[in-house]
Image (cartoon, rainbow, N blue to C red; front, side):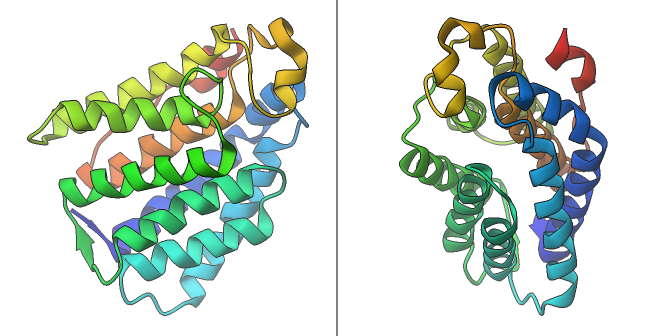
Amino acid sequence: MLTVDSFVQFVEAYHERLRALTDLLNVLDNRIGDGDHGTNMARGFDAAVKKLHQSSLGDLGMSCSTLAMTLISTVGGASGPLYGTAFLKLSTVWKGLKSVDGDSLRRGLTASLEGIQARGKAVPGDKTMVDVWYAMTSYLHQNDPFSSEVWNQAVETAQQAAVETKDKIAKKGRASYLGTRSVGVCDPGSVSSAVLFEELIHSFTGGALRLEWETLALY
């Protein structure tokens, strides 16, 4: 189960991961983008942690809505609207809920993917965060009933999707201007999304594999 308290703990844990991976995400983004994805994400989730602690959170819908609006107002570039949309969609699915089970989590992530695609106009294979969100939700739709093993395998599928963006040609955003020169670099938004799933599922199940992204994403 995911509760309001464990959701806040997830945001805190993800913020700490973003701080640790800021330089890596900036390096990746510098190669195919603006070079500030790590900085922007860390700043946004720093503000989000503070806002969540300052707010009266009655349910998970309110928690996600608070997080979404904070990200939209503090994260620069395309990441703010995209991650903000993801959590706005979660807030709609989880409205009034004080805890969610596996089915509600899957439905929420599916709605988030649909929102991200509608906002960014990307499809799987475009070398964007959609690749990771699609891999995660597709695995969950293909494997039911849920268990810790299923959730962990879903995270591994998302991680693999992020690593595999290294071999793809970017078709959306600034990276698309590089054409074939975008090959050989992991999409930073895909990496930050995979790390998000590592921490979200860790909070949900009490355990999830965390990868050494500095090695996998750069070499």
